[in-house]
Amino acid sequence: MTTEATATTGLSRSLQQLLARVRAFDARRPRVWDSTLTLFWTAAALVDASGGWRNTAPDPSVPAWLVVALSLGLSLPLYRRRRDPLAVLTVMACAALVSAASGAFLQAGYLQLIPLFHIALTRPPRALLWASALLVPPLLTGAVRFPRGSWDQHVVPALWTYALVALLGIAVRSRKDHTAALVDRARRLEIERDQEVRLAAAAERTRIAREMHDIIGHNLSVITGLADGGRYAAAKNPERAAQALDAIGTTSREALAELRRLLGVLSDDAQEAARDPQPTLADLDTLITGVRKAGLPVRFDRDGTSPDHALTPGAQLTVYRVVQEALTNVLKHAGEGAKATVLLTHTLQEVRAEITNTGPAVPPPPPSGPGQGLAGMRERAALYDGTLVTGPLPTGGWQVGLRLPREGTPS
Image: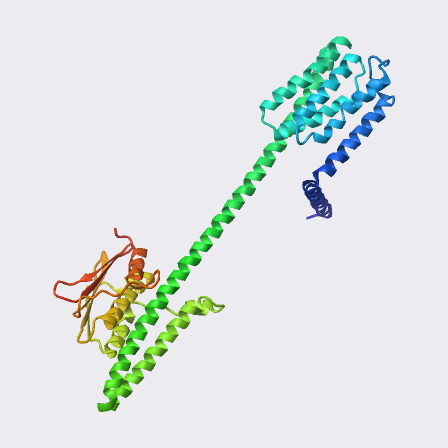
């Protein structure tokens, strides 16, 4: 960019900043600007009334008091031009009509262009018809009473001037409307973004609550089972008690690690936490081994040959959490002597997980909050267009059935 171009850009920016400050001041104190403009044009009209008006007047013998009165009538109403431009133009047009009829032809009559501009800027288009009805009579009166050459030499140039000023007001109004529309659209977009952020935050809180419920509920149930078993074995089989304590330590460390990873997304170490993988179907064996150590016999079968990695990570986490929650409920509510079976079935269209137990047909208690327990399992399934069916078995016990369609297959 050349030096001249840089200087031009800097000057343009300075002018824009100056105009912005003037507009801001006018918005804060509109009466200051209205008074200043009115006093300026009143002074100019009175200066013309002191004698200059005779240079263009067809009849220089018009009384001085009438010239002064007409000059004030053409300038003082400008103070209210923004609040009621049509009324201002009406008063000024009456003064202009007297000026044309008397032969004074005061140049202050051109001040009618100012309220005309404000009518085009702020009023409906039909207001311009009323403005035309006010502006044309003085022109015709002057052309008829004091003809100079052909009548159109006095009327047509003035009409063109009025038309150009009206078009300028319409153009400025269109630009202001466009700018206002852009500002309104930007405001709506900002509101929509805020709503999206709030909804995303609410969804994230629900997800974290659900994950913490699954992690804490399952691992505490396993630890409770291990502790009960270790207490009974302590008197008769110290070696079994030591194994139970080791299993409690392992389960506690795993629970802490999962919680640390989950809560890490809320801290500055979110990127580090994100690199720690979520549980997948490959971790089901570890999960079921921990449940078995807690004292619940679990039979785990797989049916089908489709690989686990054909599922998305989110879908695998859903299956894992549903199995985890179902086994946790068995540990909590099925009672002594209960047994559980986990059947994982893969097909080309879907993945099914069935968790059954032989304990009493007692459903788990209602969740203490949103996104937990059975409600949390149903929400997880719904995220992937899946279904969750729970209920007692005819032969006793309880069953949880999960069905997840694979991506690209109808749900």
